[in-house]
Length: 225
Image (cartoon, rainbow, N blue to C red; front, side):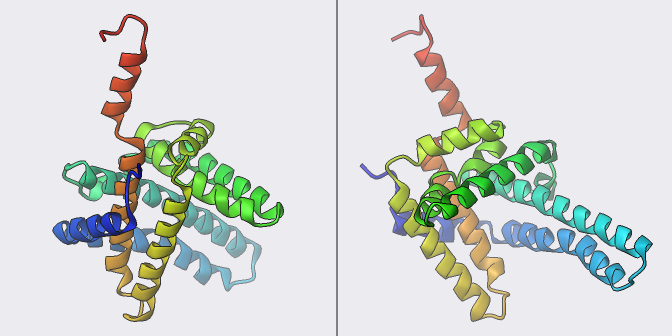
């Protein structure tokens, strides 16, 4: 039995985005601006050909990339909190910055897996991209290590890869429409829809921490029932 359908997932994303439109647009907008500032400084300084300017440009490029990863962590946390009926605010963009190293290593691992799959005639790369795409969510939600998150993502997507792939295509189309037909401003709406849709599917497949802990407790020797 399918745990979700594309129509219900996107409908949830749409409805939940409209219900939380202010905070979602705000965090996405801030999420764009914060990494852009050091990147813009890097580009400006980089026009100077001196060694010092090159070093400064490199530092700000690294800062921009670092802030981008932290914002990605924060946006996942915001989406999960809203899905779980909790209030989200700007502080959530940075509340899980302690996961930066895990998230960075996880992102590198995920990219390497996809690259390896692409080398094996492309199709395995697409399959593995879908199979392990919830790795970032598991790092943020359950604070798993990169390998643990990779394995768990493989488990929760088992039997649902085609559904997830079709959903990914649908969300890509929605974001493309948001980028094309409104000069990019529509992304302020379509990205939150994608965030909430993905959070919905993740929760349907993986459950939440409380459910996971309950299942583990029931599976322990001596558990009642």
